[in-house]
Image 1: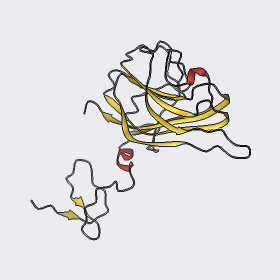
Image 2: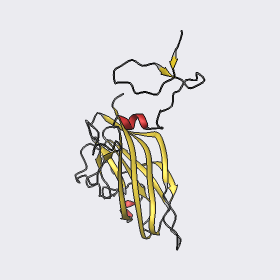
Image 3: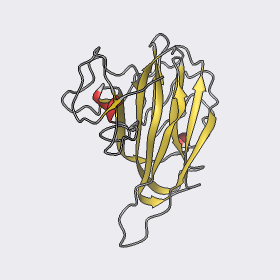
Image 4: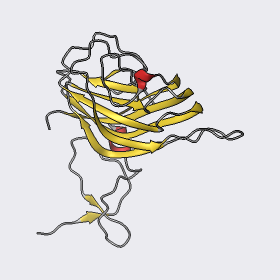
Length: 220
């Protein structure tokens, strides 16, 4: 079978058949043209939510152990959304104070149904910056620093331990702790994902947090 490649740098309209691309030496180019996530970003499929200056309490601790649990940052993928969220990046940064336990931990619960009675809190934005959201908008419901009232089941599975979050030394600025999740965590409909923090309240422990993900059609 003969495979022909074209050396070019030009956009192709949707639905139009296109040739494979090659480099100057005829090598097959299979990487994203503009960067790792550029293709899905251009499709308006990447979303982000952030929160700042959250004072950690026992309800923010990991693992989720009761319906009073409060994610630093998190979201629900509701039943019937017909999309799954593919986690790409997380962030938990100590702004001030002394952490207890140190780590941020991603918790996940499947099968929550419509048990959460608390209203969503926080904003979700598309990373396609020519609009506040993608053409379809995000299917997720944010729960940033908001108690998951009514949550059932109320026991989280700790699925990813994030970078350590250390105290801020005098005279030094906060050191952002970002984690490249690389898409290995998939959040299908009827699932919750929550970034929880530490094992105690610490001493006036204040953090910033964020999650970034791509949304794909589900089931695939």
